[in-house]
Each structure stands twice: as C-alpha cells, then as structure tokens.
Amino acid sequence: MHFEIPTSEPEKIARFYEQLFSWKIAKVPMGPMDYWLISHKDAGENETMGGLYKKTMGETGFLNHFSVVNIDQSLAKATNLGAKVAKGKEEIPNIGWFAILQDPDGNTFALFQASGRM
Image 1: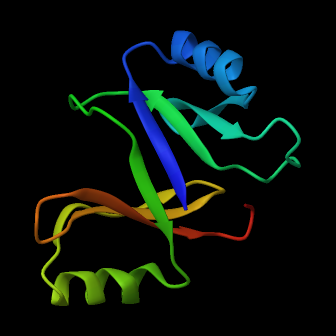
Image 2 (image 1 turned 90 degrees about the vertical axis):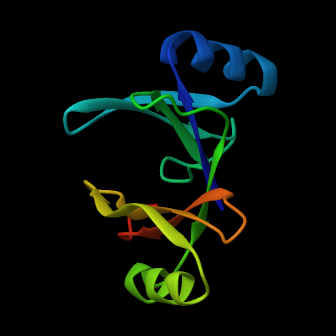
C-alpha cells in the first residue's frame, strides 16, 4: 500500500515529515507538476512508500493507494461491487497507473498498478 499527501505547501510539509519520521523525500518532475517521492531513510532507490504533491482540487488528508496486479480488472471489480469512480485510470509516467474511487460508504481510496520501476 502507498499513500499520498496533498498539500498547499509541499516543501514545508516535506521538511516536516523528514524531521518527524526521518523519511527521505525527493522532488521529481512528473509531467506538468512536481511530485515528492517518500521512502524510509534506509530504503533503496526505488523503494517508495508514498508521495506528496501541491493540491489542486481542495483535497485533504492522506489518500491510500492499494497496489493491484491489474488495474483494469480491479477497477471493474470495484465498480461491480458498488464503488464509484472519482478519477478514472491515469498513467503516472515511468511509475505506473492509478485510479481514485469511493467505496459504497463514500470513503476515498486509490488503486495503483506499478509499471515495474517501484
């Protein structure tokens, strides 16, 4: 499972979590936006556990990403079970694919399929 932290001040929040948990947080360009990859201080280069980004839609709180083997099959299964798609499947260049859903009770979560880099 991975998570994301949407924030209005990415640099400030990155420093906060680096100091609080001794996380390694590295800024990387990701298309038209910047993204900060989060990993444990002793993790290898491609062992991320999450990320943070500058929020654009009023997002709040952590967004949990559940790793899946096949995002298309998992999306279909989730919607058949009553989930609503909040953001359809989208590629994260050189990382993988994700989609954001709401469970039948309205809780938001994301599905994530790695492209092999992570």
